[in-house]
Image: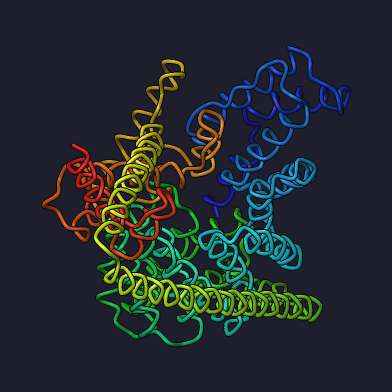
Length: 572
């Protein structure tokens, strides 16, 4: 209990940022809808400086004095909400995220709104307010579906999975996590795939399928290890230990926990640490070391109590009951009563009905997606059919023309040859213009000539990291932002400000520039090799990306290049 008292006292201690936020709140009430004065903007920038110091943002966000008030409010409230969530002050996090949300809506910033809604959803999960969590998660999911981004869709489905897991609706959770992994498989984001496999491990453990649970956790652990994510790998070790304990493989579980717990303690991942303490307590119970087991269950109780996490505390209280029932009956009875109260508070009929409605809505949205995909497939089939018919017609006309020309007199042949030479010159000029356009597109990538020194260094560093990741064969916006010591949201904001680009499009541009370099200067490399050098696992994906960028497939590009050379030789 001493640990719990200490944690509660620490949570209640005023933080340096609180006074600054209070000052901003007072000024904000006086200038709503107007521009802030210099002092208020300076206060906001001081808040962002502290947020950066606390590692909430990777770098301080700085606003100028002419920044519109709503834009400043929007960013400040969102990041303050992130701050309070990181410090497990969930009521405060929900309050400030709720203030930011209408500002994102007013600005019609769907991406920022989706991030805010997701933060609200996971905050309300921590507060055991599952109806509110589901409402925000559902709104976020709809926005993500509208964006068409499979990575975002998988994230909101993962949040919905967490809600249904928290309310013990494991079959519904299984549907969501399987759909989330299907969406994530369309991306190259290995970190996201590992996260979802870890969630799948928890889902199948709850469903009693420990073999499947262990397999998913092991797959997630292998991915995190290859990516060098030691802290996240420790989480997967904890998930593996959970499945092993249920399978009564206590020795193996103990070995994994001994490796995971020091890492979790060092990184202050309290949620996973609480689960690891519960699992360690179960291992000690199996060794009949009830006194030591009780200590670890009490540590877990303290963590989950301060986090307002009823599911975790309920499990820890049950473990504490088992560890003390024979030696400390009073403590055991209190733990058992607390366990029952927490379990009963998690779920009620009203919540069940609400979540059932949201489940049906997700199903309807998914059905609409499938219908839209079928409609597009039919359109593609019609277009392909028309194109095929036109192609056959053109071939037939070509054959007829060749046969007709074979009977033309020599004078007409000479005239035709002269005409063909003129057409060839025109084609050559068109090819020169087309290659000039391609070169111009490629040269615009990584153009930093009009940037300030710091911004130019930022872009050059970003390009270096993208090239390094390409060489390693692992290139996605999340990995790149991590290498830049930034969150994906911050990288997206910085790139939009400097180049009016998204990280995904910028990375794609660098890959295409690399592809063009190899096709131009390394004729001995085939297209499969070039695709691999540009970090494409599938040549078809490389071909599609190249055509979307330059209007030609790599094969067509090489053919046109050869035709250009032939035309040049004939002209000479």
